[in-house]
Structure formats: structure tokens, C-alpha cells
Length: 111
Image (tube, rainbow, N blue to C red; front, side, top):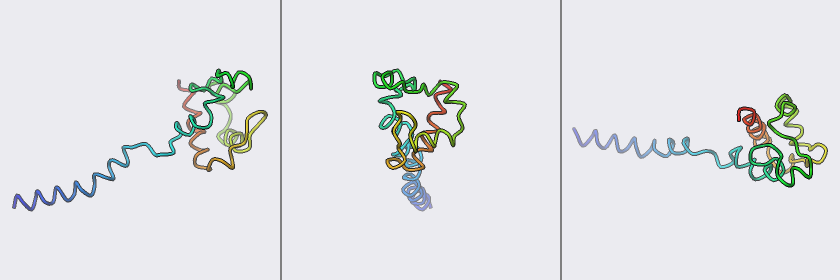
């Protein structure tokens, strides 16, 4: 009887562990990773726009009331189509990645 229980426990562990591990691991295309790959050069790690390139281009401070009060649709449009000196990322990034970046930008308001 103990062997059957032990076998059942091992069987369940073998087939559920990969799902638990997969959920605990951030997705490969996480918003933070996408931000670092595409936005940090101008907007800085903290979103302030204080990098040398950001200062030269007068990049928006992503923590500012101006940016934080924009709608998600407005931010999506700016990332997708570009605006002023900001290049368009719509052909480079998927809609899901852009949506993640908008959420990531929102997180700067809390910092």
C-alpha cells in the first residue's frame, strides 16, 4: 500500500512540477526586459529621461504627471507610431509587448 501511495506522489510531482516552475519564472519577453532593450537608452533605467541621450533629445520623464495622466491608448499610440523625436516601435514590437511597456511605464508612478 505504501508503495502505491509513494508511486502516486512521485507521479503527480513529476507532472506538476514543470507547470509550477514555469509559472514562477517571469516570461521571456517581460516588460522590464523589453523596456531595458528598447527604452532605457533615452528614458533611463528609472524612467527619468536623465541619460545623456535622453537629455540631448529632451526625452519625457515617464514619472511626470504629463505622461502618467495620458491614457493607455495615448501611450500605446506614441510607442507604436512615435512622436516628435521618439521613433516608432510598431513594426519592431508586437501589440502585446507594447501593452506590457505601457503597464511598465505606469509602474514608474509608484516609484
